[in-house]
Amino acid sequence: MTAFQSSGSVPAGVLDRLRAAGVIPVVEIEDDERAVALAQALEAGGLPIVEVTFRTEAAANALRLIARAAPRVFLIAGTVTSTRQADIALDAGVKMLVAPGLNRALVEHARRIGLPMMPGVLTPSEVEAALSLGLAAVKLFPIEPIGGLRYLRALAAPYPAMTWAPTGGITAETLPGYLAFEPVLACGGSWLAPRADIAAGRFEEISARAAAVVEIVRRVRAGAGGVR
Image: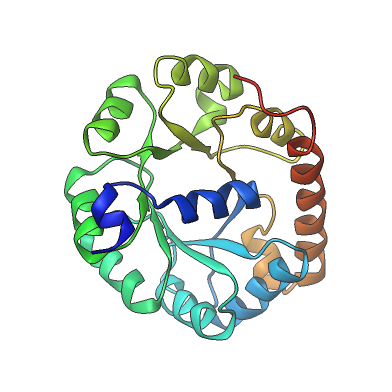
């Protein structure tokens, strides 16, 4: 039995990996031939983690290629909305699943196949549903349209046991405020590797953005500590 199966949540080692990264690059890959170069660009920038979303037909093979060619990269399958996608992700070699919403059947399926999963929530009722499933880490999506850091602070207050991965509209400018909030594990960051940059092969620019984000994370988290 895996740690995930026994605890019903994301294993401590995975939580530590997410917190250490501080930011999860969230990407859409249209051409799977770009996948490995993208992962390597992020790794070269000091950010060996990527969430490849099931928003394109190339996603499944992109995940397989990254898992084989860039094994040091912490590989996440994102926008997982069905058990079939979870099985495809498992077969591809991913280390974690992320979903935009909270689907009990999908969370339980992920538990059965031994993959850590972080579902998405937005309301107190959804947070309590996640807690009832034994989850202690959730994606908060979409954070910026619903009120940003102010909303996260208000939502988190009644749930001190929960940790968060806010995603949706966060930028390099707003990132420090989220990272300084201690319950935040990591922020989803789609600005790091936009779809157009991946398609155009602008991997040096992606690597430079990753390096800049690593510095932001280091600076914020090496400060006086997070606040609640």
